[in-house]
Image 1 (cartoon, rainbow, N blue to C red):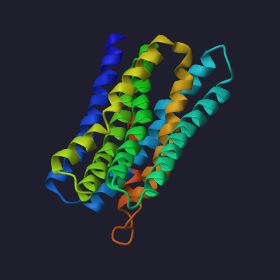
Image 2 (cartoon, helix red, strand yellow; image 1 turned 60 degrees about the vertical axis):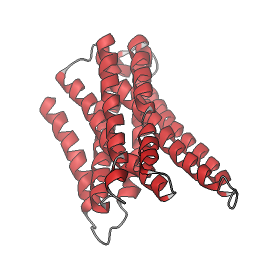
Image 3 (cartoon, rainbow, N blue to C red; image 1 turned 90 degrees about the vertical axis):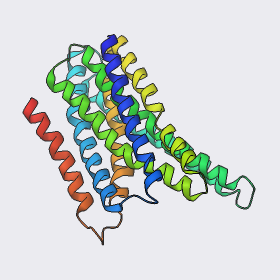
Length: 267
């Protein structure tokens, strides 16, 4: 059990490190390469969509069918919708807070409000991502430890880590434009990812100790990941299509294909 939680901690520390790496771009560049960011975001979206089914929903359905509780289709559907609604609710809270901050135009704390809202939005967004990684590793404890399942959990962590890179830059670079120093911009940018190791450990511990919630937890993580991929990553990576129309699309296709290839090879 301790080894599983430790693996979840290491994996989420890795995703946090990628966030810090993205935030560090503020030290070297005024703005990141848009084409590279679009490709990376698309790749992460493809990986997350594929991983949501093969590494989260499929094992959730199998485990729910093996249990003598609610029907598998009900557990998977409810868990999936709860994960999506959790992310939707988080986004609504942040949007409302942002609108209130916008109403303070002309006030002395206007710049600070924008900074707080920017960091808060990314931080809230990282909580279910950390939970997704923690749940994926926690499921290995419940008689599910195989090379295939381990690679699935690692792939989820890699996918989330890849999309954390532009998120770190998305915090630190605007902060720099708001007048913050490079050091402070980097610090706040990487700090937005610090919740992922905490959420990852919590997710792993819950799954390890309460086996009954595993199908629901896996479906919950899948719903959160799909909403992030479809609502945030795909629209974001499709920007600047005139200059590189297929860059983001090929990133999505490549990410999905690699995840599918890993699943077929290890299956």
